[in-house]
Length: 420
Image (cartoon, rainbow, N blue to C red; front, side, top):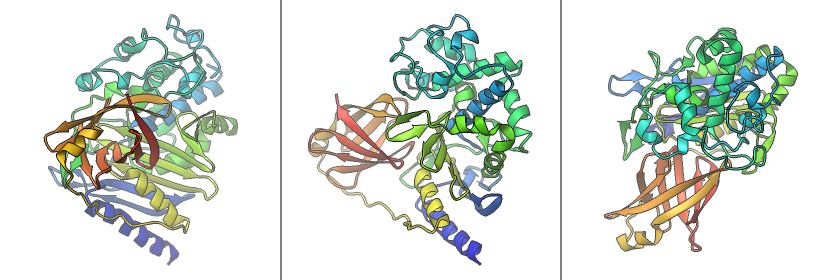
């Protein structure tokens, strides 16, 4: 009876988000091997009415990084590398390769700029590119800082790790994962994204959904190319001790560095007993969280790029742990004087996960628009004269402060943007 009551509460929660247009996807909650709840919501393909189920495959974006880190640690166990190796040992001739170690790449402390946030990425993301082309696009750019000095989230480092995996194993990145991670754990619906049966990605706006622009999977590679299901990710969570030795798992989870008050392992965030792998890519957002003290696992995969995925995961975990949670409510929007909007226009900079990005706020008639570098331009909808709401990667609430700064709650993370 206890489990059925939990399941009903969890279903009521996710159903409420779905009715509000704030979620489409699949969720799973498990304690140990026992699944407490697993269900799909909305449609994998809205045009054809295909429903989401726990077996639906979604692009998982940067959750791929944790799989890449597992592959590197497996190669370390085999004696083919050490995470302390300089990059030059495995990729001779790479700029600054004698100073950059594999550990720096695994912890985003290499100083290599992130190719995803460079000018023009969104214009070329639909074009197939080789890994060599990806690397050539960033290898000659100046380092942001001395390797190891601090953290700045960079997809570029993970592309380089994919190249190391291929050179040492003699297998393609996808084939290495298939043989050494996916097949051993019976993750039959997981692999490099873009295969048949993968959900279609959407953006939600004004109660409707629009397909997101095409992203060719070659542009994500070892940084974000995998697709998976909530069922397969549960198998992955339970099977980690079969993939890595105890000491390797300790390296995986770290934490090795800290950013924004949270520790970072190898491809995952660590806060107390909670370990999180999260991903956001064109048309999709996802999170998988392990609560080690409770042996609890929660995963949320969505094919709406601006879904409330983080909020849903937190609430599902709260239900499973008997903690307080809130059902979502519909946001109320107001009309504000157009000239008031002019106060907020301009360019802002913000730092999240050690990475600095720009946010441009512009006025378009009677609407305020926002564009964060690398993301699609979208509307800022007023909830009051100073508080606005936007759907970007996840949901974002922005408070324009009297000192000219903007306080953002971005999918549960607090970020401050400052005017340039």
